[in-house]
Length: 244
Image 1 (tube, rainbow, N blue to C red):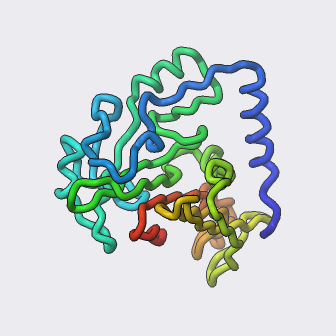
Image 2: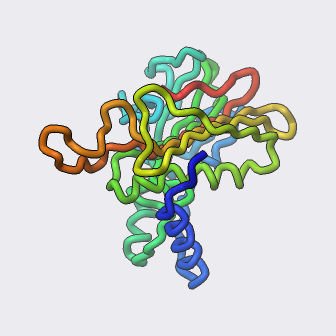
């Protein structure tokens, strides 16, 4: 794997420095990691979250839902599971803004390890939560989006006691590095008790057609890159789905 861009390391150091100075970090009242896999989806306290909707595997919200128990209104994935996405309580974000917290755990209401994300639960026909999915949100500034690939570090640290196996994926046809940097890493693992599986994929690259410079005008194209981290955890016998 080509070295990671220096701005990622700089961002991590800046975050650590802010924490060292005692800057207050605002955490959500209820996060995706509070969801208990195997329990009914009704376990999730709806008063601690906002805006329920059918998920689109990392994309924008689809049909709005009134409550988690309405999951069957969504189209099931090939696995048979229904994806229900939600946002963290916006009140926490307002508190963070009032405190002028520079390194907020909540940004736009929903984030994980300071990265804006889209979170969702995967529910079976019986209404039991079989998995959780976290995908970095592309609807942010280019500056913030560049660091999305670094989220894989946090996931690898959080699940360090799992049997993680990580590999660098080769450059596919049409893909290019961003400057001198090309990152495409995939990890998969099993929980110590063997009851759950995870898959983590992170990329920093240019996809087919994402040229750095407009061929006709020779103007630099801004935002023409992919920087993303995708995480999925599911209970056996389900296996994590592939990225779209």
